[in-house]
Structure formats: C-alpha cells, structure tokens
Image 1 (tube, rainbow, N blue to C red):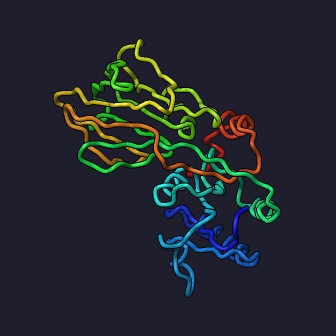
Image 2: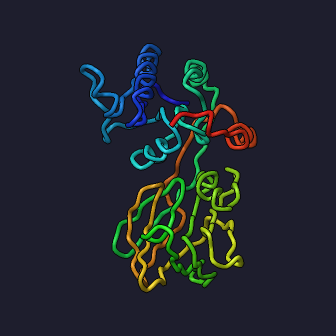
Length: 282
C-alpha cells in the first residue's frame, strides 16, 4: 500500500517539455488527493509552492525523464519505490509513458501493483566516504584512448590485471547499460549478482564475469604514469593514483521501483531489442 500523504515529483532539469508534462501531472495528483511535493525545477515554475526538502518522509517518487534522471534521483532518495515515467530514449528502468499516468494512478489507488528493490554497490577508498551506485562503477584512464592497468582482486585473491580502457562493475539494474555495451551479460532482477566487465582489454583472455553480490572487489591502479577516474552512476568522484585502490561491495542501500507487470523478458524485448535511436529526440 502506498500512502497519498507523501510523494514527490522529480523531473529532468534540462528539458522544458518534460517540465510542462510534469506540471500537468502535479495538478492531476492533487485532484486525486495526493500530497505531492515538486522538485526545485518544478517549484520555480509554480506560485506559492515550496519544493521538497530532505526532512519529508517520502513513500513514492514519480520521476519524469529517462534512466539518467532516475539514477540522479537515487543519489538523494534511496530505499524508496520509484515510478518511472519515460520521457527519455529507451527508458529501460521506467514503467509507463506520460499518457498512461491516469491508468497507473487508478491501479495505485486499487493497490494493484508491487515493488521491487535491488542491491546497490558500495564504493569506498581510504581517503573518501562510501558512495552508493545503483547502476555501475567505471574505472577508466584520465586520458581518453590511453591504456590503464588495473589489478582486480576478489575477496583478497588475485583474479587478473586488466590492461585496456578500464573496467565496469555493474548491478543487475546497470547490466542493461554500459556493461552490456562493453560485452557483459544482462542479469535478471531475481539474480543477486554483479557484473565485472573489462573495457577493450588488450588480452582476449581477460573476460567478463558475473559474480555473487556477497564478494568484495578491490581494484588497484598499477599504471606508473596514468591516473584513473572512478565514475559512479555517470558522475566522476575519485581520481585514482598509482598504487591506490577502491573497494566495491554490496551496499546496504537499495534502489526500488513500483511495477504493474513483472515481465522482465517483455521489457527486454520492447525496450532493448526493438530500440531504434532514430525514433527518439535528443
């Protein structure tokens, strides 16, 4: 059951057309009795409406945008179910289209839905606090097109050294994104595992792996003259010097989704196998 007492409306900050659609949704939510708080991008377009603040207890988040907007939402609002309304391109993480909102709200009011929560990654170093990643962690060279050497350990045991463009460590959520493009496998939601995918390795013997989420990964930069960048859900957080390491393991944080259908296979067919970039605007 989702309470109408506290939900928030998140939008893509850069797209005016998305803000207009979300403003219309705000009015429809209010008409149905939802106590809804807009994000700052919407609130600045409204009169006498304060944006959501961190002190508010939230039970549902409606996100108008694409998968990137959903990941940005996770940075500030963890362990809360998200209803993704796709205004982006593929929208693999989204559940509905904007024109399907009223039908979705009918189902929410009838309690005709379920929620899914997936494990995130915890990324830590000796010098910086731990960061949670819902999608992936990418370690790459600070110079595009130049090789970096990364030692990979699993539970303190040496696995291999990647000499190449870098490494992607993804959750099951992120397995449909960069990890898949780099040669990794999709991981179905009911499999509690992570994906370890080298990016353009120099040796073909350095292969992708699907590993249990219970392991601890240690990634060390062995390059003498090449610093590494650590990118968490698309944002660069760390610079990794020679001999420096990051630790990646299962986080206590989770990313949640509100769903009306549990067919992951249908989502793959409709949103990945039929995807045509010419069908979408920038």
